[in-house]
Length: 208
Image (cartoon, rainbow, N blue to C red; front, top):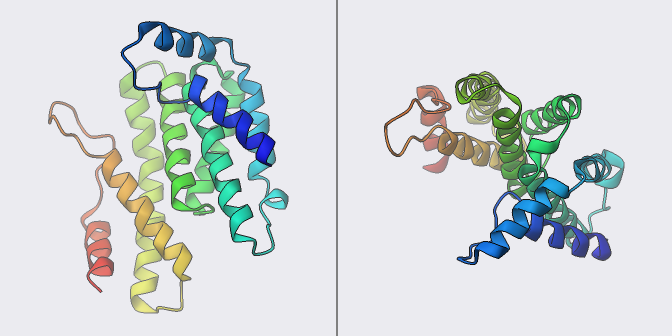
């Protein structure tokens, strides 16, 4: 596991979704070249292996779970950075998998955040234009909003209806969706507009 971590940490630095903050153009050029040369199938295979339920059972070992979460974040960062080179069919299958993971709130917040980022990256890379990407984000975003609303409503009616880890992930995802819909410049329509119901439910939860 530690060896995998080192490998993906290095790949994240070279090919990840966020190029290292530097003024040195040669380093930026190196990162961009690495993204183009990287075999995206390696990241897809790694995601499939690490996200498989049989590889996520650590028998209560908190440290192993923490390391596994970091590994998933690294892999997803590389997927975000190299999303443009992922073949269309593979991108569709990956997007479906990420979407189901988000709907099921299967991961801790830091992994959910990267799942959402990877899904957005695939939308922008694999659609004809930004308008289509925004439309796609709105479609699946509304479904996620629906899941968040449902979980929070159930929890507000019966505290035992939803376990604490799920409700915490629900509130986190709602926050990430809110950021996704935030339009700081006011020049374009936001990707996703949150419902008043969800906003009220989140505020009610946080006030308790």
